[in-house]
Length: 163
Image (cartoon, rainbow, N blue to C red; front, side, top):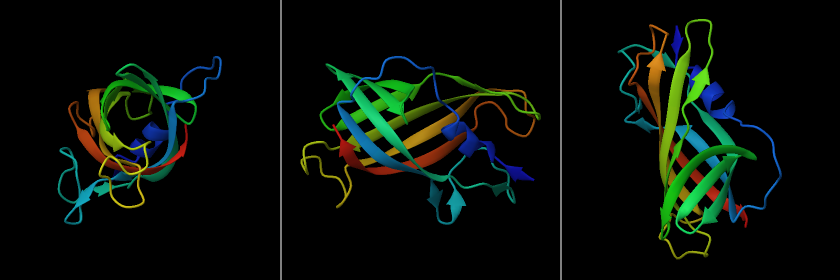
């Protein structure tokens, strides 16, 4: 059985409602990939021998600032809120409900990233203006194969595309 194949659906299916379109303060093309260390997926809920559908997708992260507060939209839809300090952004999404035949899941994303809109002042890897991590945490689960408290780690990297 492929465990956690829902993660990709989770990440791309998190759009919100419409509304008037605002111009972001900064926009990044961000690649989201499953974190892998020594050939193993970084997660606290995969039993030995489990198969896992790796995530590797690209999204547009739009940042809107009001003082030190930030709102993160993904592909034009509301996703998370956070706080910025210098080149660092910490953010947390709302809790998302995913209705599934094997049991509903509620999950939340928390992330931390260094971002650079100033052209090299933030010490990021060459060619990148966004480097970070995201943790997807299952906050409630009706699926016996995916227990509450499971986390899946993601790596985020990107480039500035606007703002």
